[in-house]
Length: 395
Image (tube, rainbow, N blue to C red; front, side):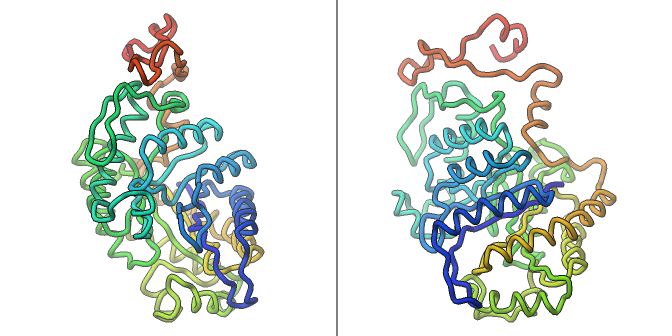
């Protein structure tokens, strides 16, 4: 089970102090938050992708590469990468590079996002959002697995003899999560490819997320990737923690009331009752988070949103101390005791390499300047005698 932090990268006025951080302050602060995530014993940090104010994270791979360079064990990821308005060729290149510079400590979540104007900004039609997501991922999937790709689709120019570089580290593509809050076709896509499915599980009742996850598990089994219990599921969540429950409520209330996303709607008490938001003591946050397992069964990744709604950096870092020191260890132990022995472990680069190669050393692609140059369309690898002996099925 992996635990971590996800950020939507909002720059929001602090309703208590009345100050709004600059972009520079938020970017510097998010790196500190990621470093703190590792320091307190969590596993994953994920950042969203947005191209409009009040968000700053328009270039997730640049930010995540900086975070990977200043951490040792942290998995860096996205929440989400826009599969609809990014060119899949560019995604293949950028995230393979991130895979290399992080030493494999990365994966990514793909989604359509929730900002309608982003489509025309990048020359796409929002009315084609779903077919774009399906077609673009089909191409991305192939670019990471085929040395030379010939491809033709509806939404971009054809590819002839194209080789995406760099090739994935160890010739093993990054693990992909498909994120959605409402679209069964995305859950179907995740199941078809045997990828992970991430339910944001922040603003909606548990019953809503459960329908999508149950559908994904059923289809995962249908496509032969394993049993329903072996499907790879991730969940979002929100929490605000204080030693005493009443302190958590009083401290978080002004941020909740003025939050651009859910402020001026249901009360804090109503929202925590209706949704996965947890505001209270460590014991209360533990109890509510464990209720996710009651609803969904074993799952592999739990990410918390902690740095939104104008909360100052110091408060966020203090929250991570409480989460990492008093909440996560208890949840880890309890979930381990409940774990079905047949359920899947959280995927990592190391586990994917073992699954592909067993005890053999991983294959390292070696581009050949005379072939695979995106002109001739030849193979980009020197099929050396050592590779032929070690990997006869690849030649």
